[in-house]
Length: 161
Image 1 (cartoon, rainbow, N blue to C red):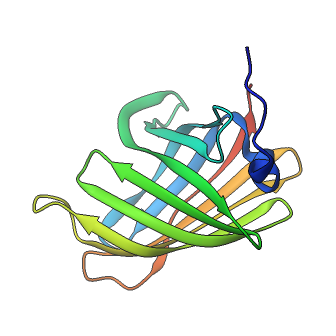
Image 2: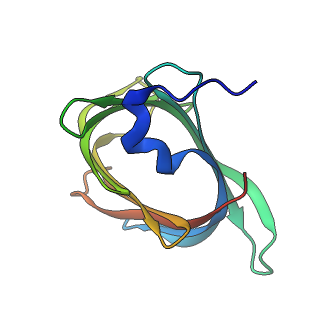
């Protein structure tokens, strides 16, 4: 039985569901690449969304290659169209984002980036999520490895459930 959507989640309900698609990545410290992605936003009737994302390298023929990044977290709406997002990565990085929701668009900037001793040096990030027609587009800018905040990843995903 599907739990009732908590009223605080109304501004974020456009994200609900499972999404799949492809994107591109690049950064001054790595070669450009294409990736496939699965992303989901679910809820349990409480005032937060449960978020998960997995990516794979896309081979030249379009097939999925080796696993790339994965992240999980929670999106918590706040008053006045604000949102707090916590993300954890298995590579030893934890991020807290603060941002705002406007219609079907969410803009986020890091408030805190914490990392373990063995994690790569990531110092800041900004993310943008929004509907492009029926699709979910998103982009991630990152400051890492001594580089200033700049474009790193972007994708366009189709709702699959």
